[in-house]
Length: 113
Length: 113
Image 1 (cartoon, rainbow over the protein chains, first blue to last red):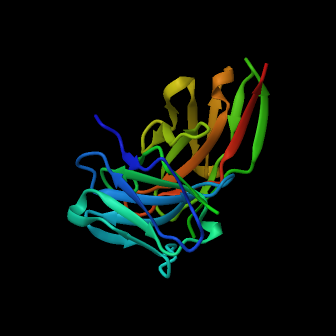
Image 2 (cartoon, each protein chain N blue to C red):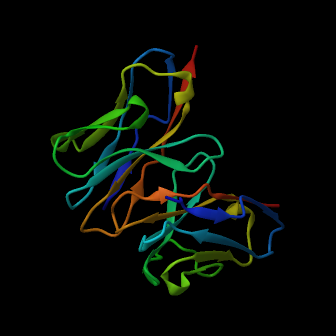
């Protein structure tokens, strides 16, 4: 069974630039999460989708972050414009249903300079 | 409010010694509990999970965890640590009735020869 795929693995951008991350969840998984993990901290949930609908985006900085999950499969997370404090690893995860075990991708390490 | 607490930020053990990592949770519903491991530069890998039934669960790599409802705890244990176990360990909680998947702040494990 293929795992959660994320790209790119690494990205370096200057502040005020924009960036997008892509995630392909495990086939059949209806629930998709985006987490932000700052160095030395646990993952922080940014947004949760159930199929193509948003379940929770309460911690998503909506003035600069956006995410979509068209057709309930792949998802993209965008930051525009980026700030220095956005430097982190962005993890995508999926699960067959909410609250059950989430399977994680390798993450995208973003460095904002 | 739901939360997960990992009281130990960093633990150092000798190779071959036993290990116990602590996790306490606060959750309104009956919880699903998980332990994940993260090696440097990698995504999170599921070690074990508890949904219901036997409160002592076995996981991969020789790890086990015990759910104690009275103490709201789900501590991770291993009888004999290997150098390759050095990593960051995260406790997480979800629920069948909930939508979210909460992580603790993590415990960093160092294994010394």
